[in-house]
Length: 314
Image (cartoon, rainbow, N blue to C red; front, side, top):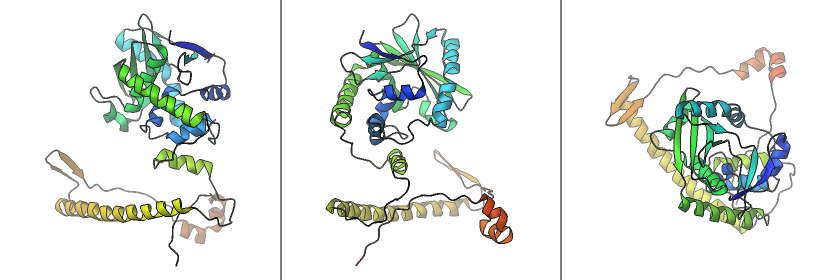
């Protein structure tokens, strides 16, 4: 066996489970480290493992429903394939590479194989067409194959609550060697010595910064080093390019709108175009405050956010 048992999962509280996850890198961390997960970034994985990620004990809505539906997905996989699956209620640890952990959804009875169960939004349907598997999930399964030594894995997904797909994933030793190297580098050169990775421009990193610094608590002005000035110059150039591109994009769209005119839909070549009516209702808070100040005050909620801006001073 490639692995040893790090801990059982039966009877383990969520808090204990979160602590155990800090002992290594799991399958859901791999895509983030490789820059293929829009919900997690390398910096968020790092902060999670060193215990500096705020609100890490709060489970997201998507993660919650993924857990709730796991058994349903597993049973449907059995029904459609004729295969039998069983739980493996342990956190597994690679014997040679102890930073590699695996918490499997199911294993296949009678096969040297595992099953990963997923749920996905209907908007993600295109990511599962034909033989396509989202890269982050593909790497997750290969990570588990590396830890367990299994020959192959299956992934089963319920899409939009009403579409079920399952796919087979063969063990790919080339990918596994790549994962071992990149995970080793991340663990030894970042987590182990508490050296944070360079923060990137992903939405995941932006959300992490909002969690870490939700509000300013020190109003004193500080002096930054020259690196900040270089970043500002780079940002200014990119903003200028962005503005130009936005204008060019708007020009293309406006010319197409002229062609569509009062029509709602159009087609050309392999494209479908729509310019539909959209009805929306918005609360007139200004007049509500004037006409019904008591109601406005009762339901007015104050929130704190931070606005980032850069101005050049003479």
